[in-house]
Image 1 (tube, helix red, strand yellow):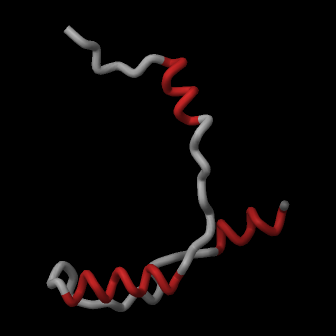
Image 2: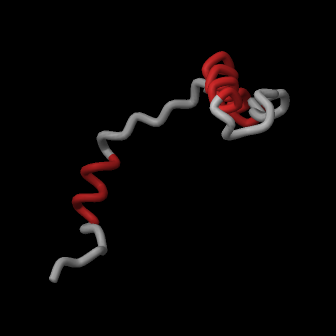
Image 3: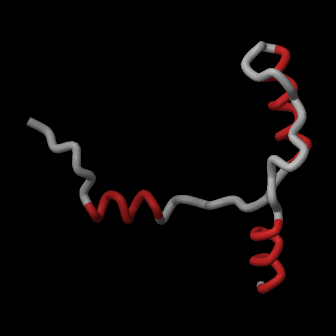
Length: 63
């Protein structure tokens, strides 16, 4: 029987390969919203107010 619990060392090794991104491409968000609307998944492609850049911008200013 295999365990469903991840080994700590394996998890640590995997996380060392992650490269978190903080860039927000609003054009891509709008494009995906439009595609989703055209496919009938969402009723509107209005993304106004969807992303609050306040926190990301504040962190970037501290660097």
